[in-house]
Image (cartoon, rainbow, N blue to C red; front, side, top):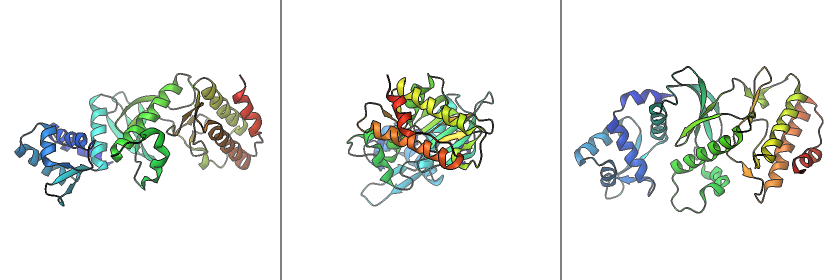
Length: 292
């Protein structure tokens, strides 16, 4: 990831200019030079010098169509600010290769100073279109101006809080390590999504374990995944698995809770029936969730 290499080229003054634009973007998409000067607390000469440098490094977009020139961060700059903070906090020390790419996020391997390997999930909502944002209405409410930065930050916060809540039960979900802005750092299982396995050892055992875990999360955590399928379960060759992607989770008193739970369970049952010939009864499984 080229952004990680850029970190070494930036001085603290450059980062402060990017943060000044970030603050201004809470109010409008593009931030005028005078506002950047105000938020950074720099003199105009220093402000212009730093803006020129970060613009040259392709970290900001310029809008010269209005009476005053204005700038906005691009996704590269936002990645950079989040990674800088995570490095400063000694959460990670280096970023590894891309290990997964979804509609709403990229996942990279990363490492800390002790050599622990984690996954860094970087939210990219709005990358393809803002249609996906509709799914996050519960998250964003009825706000007027919504920057893509803010939406991705909220998404990371929501998933991180879900992982924290579930991790207490010591189940097969990623261990949350830290998050900053739109990046979550969590434990990493060296495997691949269930959908990519042609055969697996003991499919019945894995199926039962998944259902059992979902039941515990429902009963103890009072949570439903809300978007579960064969793409959200990572499995390794030893039969270890992780249930991932908790952005769409809902509480069990959500108006659509029952239909979302039914869909989650239905997806898992259908997949294991089609792929591994495991017979199951969705209604019976659902009843086991609802029993006191």
